[in-house]
Amino acid sequence: MNDEKYVFSIIIPVYNIESYIKPCLDSILNQIYTNYQVIIVDDGSTDNSGALCDEYVQKDSRIVVIHKENGGLVSARQAGIKIAKGEYVLNLDADDAVLPDALKSAYEIIINTNADIVSFSYECVKLGETANYITEPLDEGLYNKADIEKHIFPKLLVDKNMQHMIYYLAGKVIRRSLVTSHQLNVDKSISLGEDLCCIIPCYYEAEKVYISRYAAYLYTIRADSMTYDFNVAQIKRLEKAVENLHKFNFKN
Image 1 (cartoon, one colour):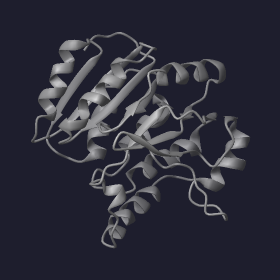
Image 2 (tube, rainbow, N blue to C red):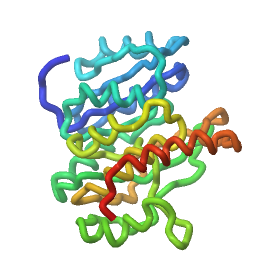
Image 3 (tube, one colour):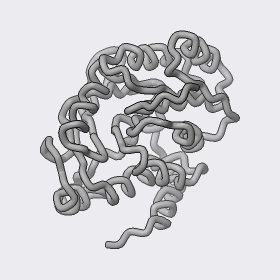
């Protein structure tokens, strides 16, 4: 990997998802804004995913692939962020995609606001068709530290109206100096609620957050997704995430 400086590092964990990986990577290579690197982390795939990722290295020098033993989503993201060079990090799930102007939009927001976090809305796609949109429970715009404490803090978990911030780490552009330590502090054994353990501390320490209503992130609804297959046994798995959050030194 070269020593070029990048504005964005895009981290894509991959595990046995060969039927989705090409649309995902093509959506990155089709970006209008081009100052970025792509870090693909093959988390011990047993299908053809790893080989497909290697093909993309030949297509573009900005792409690097890490092949590692299977360790789960958290470990894959951690492996990626350890070699990230961009000023900002975008996590992208390998079965999702982004619109061609996603990075351009993020860059323009950052240049105009110096935001630490840019949170895009999500277009949920099922069988190639738009199913619905997911947006933050706040107005579009820039939130400074006082605004974050007043409007975002109450929604980091659930407010009195049962509203909360979107917990997905994917689809958010976050300053690397802010997100790295929190990503590395997430327990690798957590397999449900792992995004919470990273995004909540990031919001807590951010100086500026920009909430965008633009659905630049295309979230794929899959029938076999763990998100849509919740069962009582997963309560214990979520408990690990809560325990991990307790390690963060919240001042309030």
